[in-house]
Image (cartoon, rainbow, N blue to C red; front, side):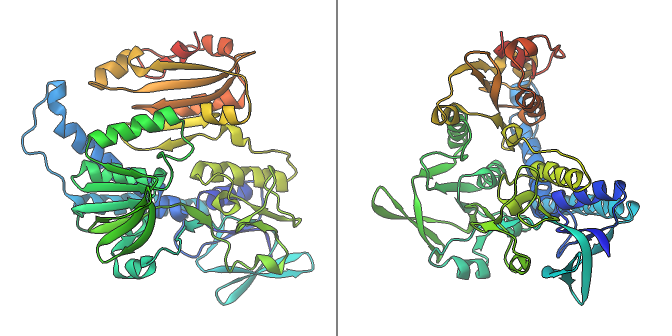
Length: 451
């Protein structure tokens, strides 16, 4: 019998398992596919590998702006995919080694909760039944596939793709339709636009990038539109078949031709067939209901990561898994969801944490907004010819407490953790003023914003 059985070997699962083992818990991880989950195998890591190759190609194409001339820069998509596979294999092997070093049992099977017998939860994993005193459910998420006419047949034929299949395309499509202008759709838009594909983004909302600070999402859209991306906002897709995507826009029926279609409308918690009903775990709209301590309504059962539907980001899963382990071993920690940073790895990058001007208005918060150009940074100016990056800070008007920070430009992903700490620690502008930032760096604009 195990002290802890973790269902799902993604970021939340494998990291939590390591923490539990370090605390002396006899731990087992059940993962139906590969360790690392969606993030490592078909999400965060492989997409960043592709995007970095595209960034290098962009640098080569625009090197003349920096006094460097290249002749005949070319891109080998198949080689990029091979490198992506190598990177993923290396990291998956690293996670496996981590499990072995922690003496954590790993079972590669589909898990189903059977019920509880005495003090033990019973979980079917292939031919065996595993028992554990506690469960941590980290089953992750899967793409949302709405009942669009022709979609499922198009997925079978390969005309339509999800984030999983598009990562293994051997040939570059001449025309790509992207259904959904959120993070996944935008990152693949960035990659394929950089390597020469004609990209059309169809988004139901009147803006891209979901809850991102609107001024920044508008800047991102304008930038990619200038690079040739066609954005169809307010478009309701009605069918995907016969080499076309049909949609309604302003009451009119229209179509766009494509060689491939990426369906990136969103993701949903993977709770189907987990057997949650066998122990009475409460769900809401398909996601497991947890409190800020990662506890479900069933004592001894916790849930972390995408499966709880709170914030579907790998680093959220890491923290949630850690909090779950702390609390099941006598601690009393919680997740501060107001301080979870998010990043869109386009080029330029977008990074955000905390309140936006829009969310603050909805909550009737009295705020002060500070916006500064990244061109205040000498390094940014030196490295970004014609760059239009900005940093926007949302402050409480009375005490100037940092409520949110939003960045559009290079190094945004590497800067946002500091802003997240400011939000988490409820720092005031006067506190940030006392911080010494290295020079010359792009992050110095944070200091510029609080003076």
